[in-house]
Image 1 (cartoon, helix red, strand yellow):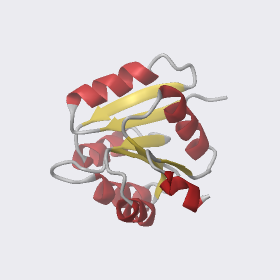
Image 2 (tube, rainbow, N blue to C red; image 1 turned 135 degrees about the vertical axis):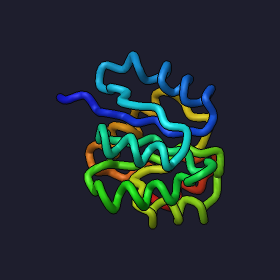
Image 3 (tube, rainbow, N blue to C red; image 1 turned 90 degrees about the vertical axis):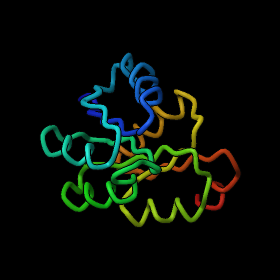
Length: 138
């Protein structure tokens, strides 16, 4: 099995660093970049395409919804996995309409994050919430 190439996008450096530390020891994942906003993510994808983008949704300059639209329109094989603090069904709908394959809320456990990355890599949608909203989506 080839390693999943992962781009981490979050405007909080501590979150980017934590996710990188969290996932860099996973034998199935290679971190190909860290971006602090959607514009930076789009530019990074042009130079070094990823298999999966772990995308925060609330960011300056270009938010995660807009970045998801841009990336999935140009690179339909790249899977976007939203990771956000917003447990909001309308934001989930926006993310899916933009092209996201998954939606997780912070905080998330490492095992769930790994499971979500694996699922979207296999072309399966993945939804994880702090509430029971996800039960209505299965």
